[in-house]
Length: 335
Ligand code: SF4
Image (tube, rainbow, N blue to C red; front, side, top):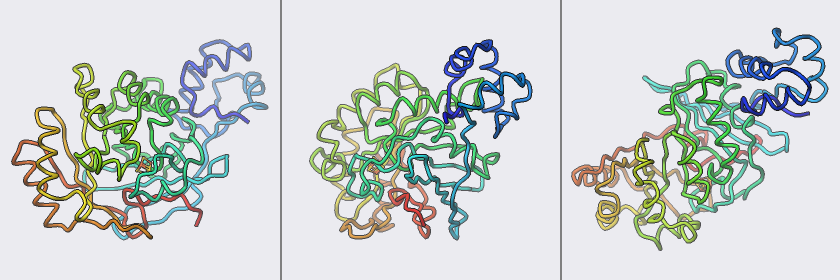
């Protein structure tokens, strides 16, 4: 059975027209899906009974609850969802004093092979549909408290760009959730042509995983650096037409690997002159992996050096480590 949830307005209009129903029924369905969170086709009460009967044999709404939740001592919650394909994904709800962020997945597994990431060990199991991406938001028990969504969970969003763009349209469009683009950040290691498509078609914020200013060292951490070098990514994102949005660089700090003064100075050389922010992220050790986190003093000194050189740099606070919900720890394993 096909899901209605996750279809854009254009797709809903096409669906109803194929059934011989008027175009405006598509807008009516969008209202119920995205503004009223209807869970059953028969709940779309301003659609005629006949229209509902025509849709029901082939379509369902397609929302489904998480199959498990783990709660961290710091209040972070990790939700597990089972996809139709049988694969599992996770999303992480992070409440803070002034905001509540949901970190969502765009793929089950990932084929990018980053050396510091649990998700990478699975390889790619499935691309999420737009409906499966958005279900993580609409089926979140804390949905009404959400202020921000980040596409930083399992998967590389630019490797599933068409479904990601559909989900972003529904989140930001007037017929959908109507969120400001500023509330949404999409994170990437920098895959072309997905990144170009994202920049052309979405105003949402962008976070690039950098992790080293040196090509060869970055390649050891992020193998796709070989095909998509950081300098090419930089060349693309600093184009005038793309600089209206906030762009940040993510930098996970590994002890003795990328946390020296040499690295800090090279970052300044690479990024200075652009309106770019840097987020330093503490690494969370994962099993059977030699990488270890930089200590807090090293991170603090690194941050201070970059700020003194004019690069706006912050250290992202660490959340949910005790339930393996922190950056790079998502595995999607059924408990
Ligand atoms: S860090 Fe992101 S892009 Fe890299 S393997 Fe993990 S999920 Fe994929």
